Length: 459
Image (cartoon, rainbow, N blue to C red):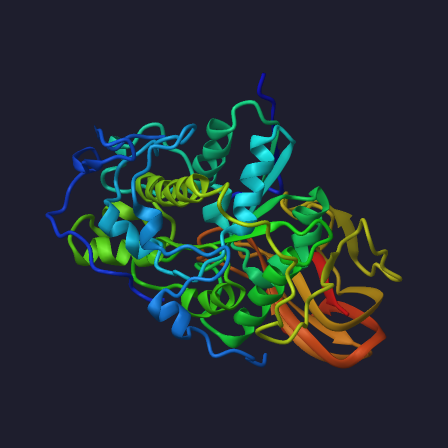
């Protein structure tokens, strides 16, 4: 009998365009008909320094090396024993090439996870990302045609349990709304790696900015996963807003250099909209979060990728230990988040212990007075994770390191979309040293409320 464990970690309240695709008029989900994997037709349904210059000749010409398969090969239908057809049929094989366009991907580690699952050994699979991974679904104009509504992570997990029904799985959803790879690299150990996952899917292309800073934090995050003690496999998912905003141009360089499996929803939907297959309003109700249709499409392209690797699982070699040089500086390889479970203030001032924000519940809050909480900690880099609120009560608080003000944090998010965590790196030193950190109300603060969710330290 199959056994399944669900481990939902910290659920919160909340490249490039691909190859050409079939044209067509705007259509509703139940009008999207293409041949499925088994040849039958099915309607849509539920279900800081750069060391490498990015894409080189391998990506351009699709040259293969050991453990790599051509992206086009992965689109071919195959009658493989145990292969499960995708639960939806929104993406034609031609359109799918927009999502799976990197012939240099090395699928050996992913195939090894499949072989482990097939052998009956317990398998742990994790996703880490923002609100899209967490499961936020916006209201698309045709979502009434998609039932039941499921987030992409649930569809992704379903592939594993349906393909290997006798295997015991632990599924970890480490999506937290409004978090980026800077926060992610500080929480990945506790939220993901401490569970010894066999496979980790990374999704931060919407919340990350298109900058060198985010390239560095994303690179360090991916490297921490690949260099973890149990050597998990990693898979990268590139999401994007319907208006084209995405950090794929930075993230794909990381995946390309490490030859990781990569799937691009953002490239696919840009082609879909250009070809008038679906409109932006069908794919998202707020430009940022996919609709139920968008999540179903994301789940489908992940399913197709997994099916293609499954078809080749016994031909792909055993994976090699990861030993590739970093693309950027390794600034955050031992980064961590210090909260009231792991650090005790030397002075509380007018702060008290609290549990204000469920995803990061071990916090400290000032509701009146001047604040003045003090910590002693050892670090080279320091960031502050804090809570922003829309009620107009939160204020601006200064951060002092060794008596010098290094930043002022504004927790007032009046008029914003909702309360959320925010983070800011406030200090970078020349090496690891012991420091005194004080957080106190700014002299011109507009509010008294301020919640510290944690100190983000890197050594």
